[in-house]
Image 1 (cartoon, rainbow, N blue to C red):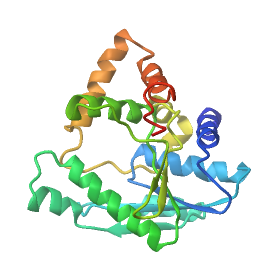
Image 2 (image 1 turned 180 degrees about the vertical axis):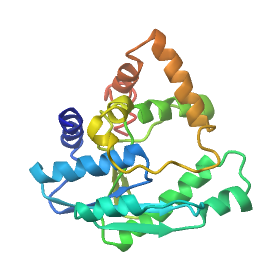
Image 3 (image 1 turned 90 degrees about the vertical axis):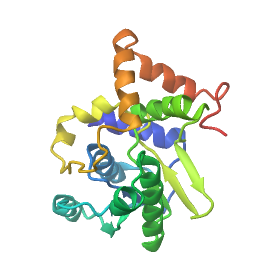
Image 4 (image 1 turned 60 degrees about the vertical axis):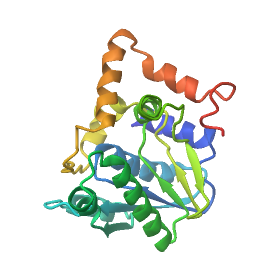
Length: 237
């Protein structure tokens, strides 16, 4: 955990993600990344030089047979306020709209629900569990499918909702989360989304894995290019 906490702290300091008195809520899907972020921020706040409050919100998409009890119990044990926002997003995307490429609409609806719930409970920042692999995947997806160079930033202020989105895991690789023994013991809920594993992101993830066989340091090199202020400006626009 020291390595993960060290990398997270560096990102927080490099991009001034947390200020005194911040009320930060983690968007918890139930997957390994968001749970790892929640756990890491919970540990970090114990020695953080900047005091902040921490909470968690899950946007329930309305799929059947999803039980958030284990996450609720974890939050209770760690004195983390936990909220579940019930929605019909799954029904809207798959049954009503019958989207062939459902991820974009689903993501927009989830984002809106998360931000609204965060404001409702008085939080001023939303923390998301995107790691360095997500950064690189998003970059390639933008290039391949949108014909542009684009990527999410470590810190984004949203004028409409007056919320700030932070991504403390941007320096952390997916494998460091996946194979960390402490994080393996966290409660994780398997996705039951009908599109899980067959998305454009999954295709790009497979492509990157293939490229890494020839270029093992691909993630580091692309991340360095994205974060280079004198070149792409993707994180500094």
